[in-house]
Image (cartoon, rainbow, N blue to C red; front, side, top):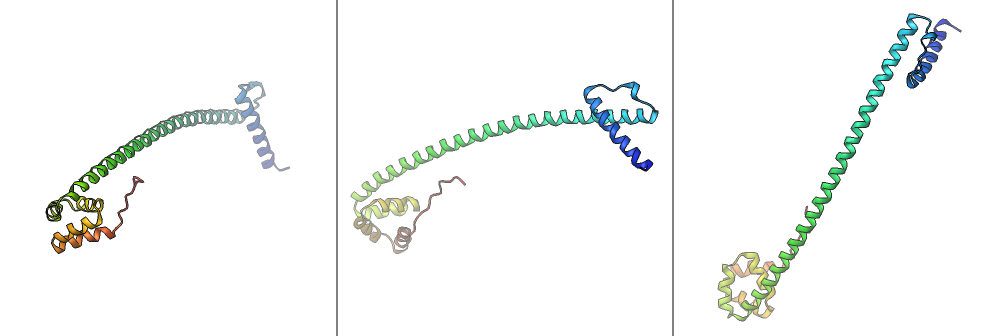
Length: 170
């Protein structure tokens, strides 16, 4: 065996025994035979202490991260609950709005087509379309007939378009 190999084996043996001794706190001063050996042992003990300190910091950081993760999860759950409540409120608003449009459609249906045409022309485009959709088709045709051709054409086009309401929230 060469001298270099012997030294490496000795260092490995010392490292393992020092690591065990450092872990258990059983470094025996009587077993140290040279200054170089003492220096190596002290260096190994220092490294072990640094590793132990680092492990402690990592454990602490992991605990902080777990705590933060739980807080984020709670906040996400609260936000989802608020989103669900908002969707319910919007659905209720839409239902009420649709009910009122249906009632208003019945009122317009009872008017003369000329008077209803004048009023519908002054309304917001989407409201006018919604009202016409709620009126009987024969009456809606008479109302469109009483409107100027441009307005009647625009409103007629709305009957062929299918509105898509996005409920996903994105």
